[in-house]
Length: 609
Image (cartoon, rainbow, N blue to C red; front, side):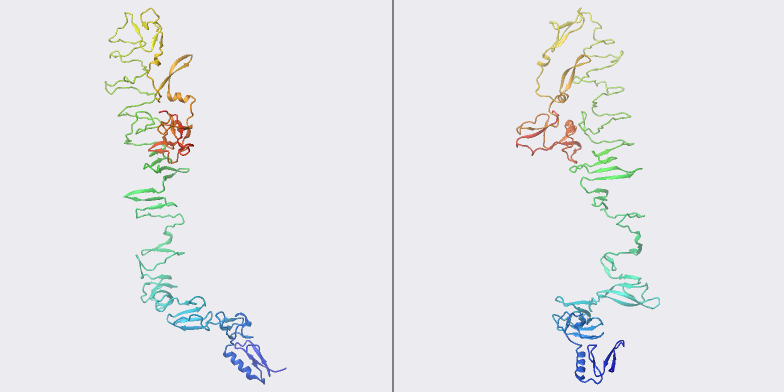
């Protein structure tokens, strides 16, 4: 067996055996054994390969072990002579693969353009700004700044500062943050007082300290801007306040102290910012900015919460608002559900007058009864539609009369008219008997008296006269002549106040009764109220009585109650039911629905004017 010579690597963990008179090629170099002839070429190539760092182009990929020298050893240097920026340059073998080694270039200006021998990962030091760059090979400036991110003229960086602690003269390392030569913050692992004055940092707290002496707009010292995840306390002036004492916006918050808003704009409430509580011209204002809106005041009852006060904006086109008490849908300026009590006077300054019952709008009106415990003084007339019950009726002075020539009482029932001690004058024909003395007339008839009738009444005898002292039974047989109708003035139309006579049988006898025009028409099979028809009248012709044009106009509910009961609010908008304080409703609008331009749609109202 031939003898060998062992050759160990630097780490003494691997041995290469070289045979005598032979060679070993387990590495990129050729080891020569003892007594080997022709060693000159091998030694020369070994030295040459070392000098050029085994310079050769890559055969495969840069990271492939087969790309560099054969049988590389860990730590071996290889210069990839491939002249491009994607893998050429100096590499080192780490035992597994070849790793690129960067080249550091130093100059006042960055190398530009394709530079021979410049590869990805090479370094460049800017000797003017004292900054380090790495070569990327992309863009017009293929150098990426590594740091520091400042230049020599404007110090903007983070660096370690050594500050002496005044308490024990020990040196405390801290991290200083600089922007344009100004130290804006210090990060420390403990709290201490600097022995030498540190501008803006009289005491260095544990954690992040901001410079308190850098001036800001309307404030002093630098601040944190943006979002901070956690803070135990907040500084208000010079006072440190626990963060739990501040109100939150993400949940219900409670404060044990007052809440002051020191501006007239006040408090804005609601997802749409509709409600404002503020001050206007010295007055407190609750303002809901939504058109047609309400403001409700709610209180808690025993079982639930109820709205006790509603302020309604009313119709958009009027300035009259509405207030409801225990009423969420007021229809008047003040609409109360419940009793109204006052220990002082109720003063109404409205001057509306009414000489008949509604639809007129007097200053005070009620749908129910009224009780007045004391005297009622009325400045003008008193109108009562139905029966009046009074304990006594006295004239203001002796000059007042009961009824007059134009308006007489049809019947008067009384147990006594006047009294025996005071004379009473009666200007009338009396049927029946009178008790007491009749001054100015005979107490009995001594001669026969003939009574003769003129006009529309006719007696059965030919003389049309009657003697009350005749031997007749005292019964006058009379009848109405045709002149009761024939000779009367003629009219061409009926109005609401007209009355007609009707003969009706009741309890086996017939009697005359009166009927109004409206009552008569309501019982006849006429056109139903609410019927719409086409009318061909010319523009100057009057609309038929009882009809209105279907043009969408508003009518008072009380004047056209029959039509309102039929169509109601069918053609009326929600905010169109009150007009100038009067309940109204709207007709259908068929103005643009006529089959022929000159024809009109009209609706029967049942109200004849």
